Length: 432
Image (cartoon, rainbow, N blue to C red; front, side):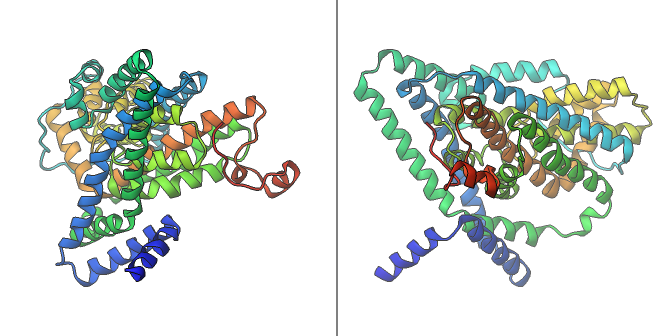
């Protein structure tokens, strides 16, 4: 028993990213050596299922307890986070337009994809979004409808703040802490989950399927990496007036890796919550901004919608001018905010964007089918930049507020010389 406890302790003390990398390597090796051991993939399914299961409860409990027990209100930091989310998503669509103009793509259309519900216009997307806000709260938690969860959690938290005595608030805080502990337990098992996900991906998807659409996939991934490594850091640099890459790379490392394999912004919410806590952010803020970011901070979705729509236009011979491209960027930005936070959530918004150029729904759904073919890479990279961006912009908004108040930033954002000058010895400091 003592030996087992010692092994568990050493496992937990090892850096999580290192554990995940080892899990990835083992998953790849097993997929190549014993592809028939499909039970290994079940570990990935269990991990993603656990994250998706706890995430709605975590969001509801955190927001409710923060509003009921906290003394702070959502201030200008929250407004700035929203601004950063929307600006980044719009600029991502613009990057996709520029990339598509520089490297125009055409598609080989074959079988049409099928879908139960395909939005036909931005009005329908926004109407559906607003309708989801007031859906049944129990159903919202069961179906991971985060817009509705946010709405009801805020109302419930405000109501509890008005009527609850101190012991009632303490119970809410204790429940929040208990749920957060469960999340930490699940995240500690991430290496096994990632191993299962990598095993399934490598053992079931060959590389031959990407040859036909290699150029299209390269454009999509190239635009996404340009946004993640150039555009978003530029926004953060202007806000913080310093080198943003230590923050960018930390978010990609600790949020992006798990998001890449789970392919779900919603499932990655617990991971992002834990990272925000590590970065010393205000729990009252990130408990709202992170789940909201999983809904409206959709850089990758905006890129996918834009690139695939322009590829469809090129394939059908539709000429797209600059004004139309700008309208498409705005449409993709708004549409991306309505994209589901699950794998492939952005693809069903392609027909809506295609309708802007008069492209028929039959052709548009064939484009969606192409998206599912390359989705094993496209959707993974898309989710990676979406989810890591949620944390990066939440941190950017809060650190900007720290600077205005004369409070030093976390040590990892300073150069060695600055740290010595300011007497900073720690990378992270708890939020005040």
